[in-house]
Length: 112
Image 1: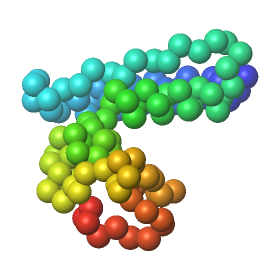
Image 2 (image 1 turned 30 degrees about the vertical axis):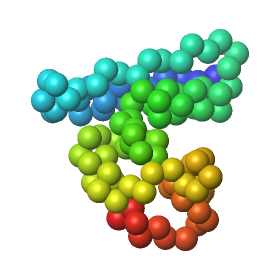
Image 3 (image 1 turned 90 degrees about the vertical axis):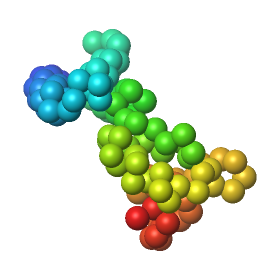
Image 4 (image 1 turned 60 degrees about the horizontal axis):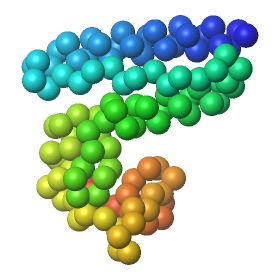
């Protein structure tokens, strides 16, 4: 129960942070708050966290049309697009543990 109440406090802080960041953008670049996932009262903290992360990844990020990778804003996407090579070989995106598109855990200098 304690963890659930602290999750609610965290959630409200995230909403405030999102709204403040969006308010600093020009009106045409603002994004709506990602929808809150609908979970039952018996959902675990891990389930709530995973659902919130998925909603943010799908609705809160800007995605590259070449490789599908998500970025926090248009400016970051624009930097990425300069060096984007599109999907990994075989037509599927592969991710390392760092979440980067590409092969293993080594550095991928093409994305910098």
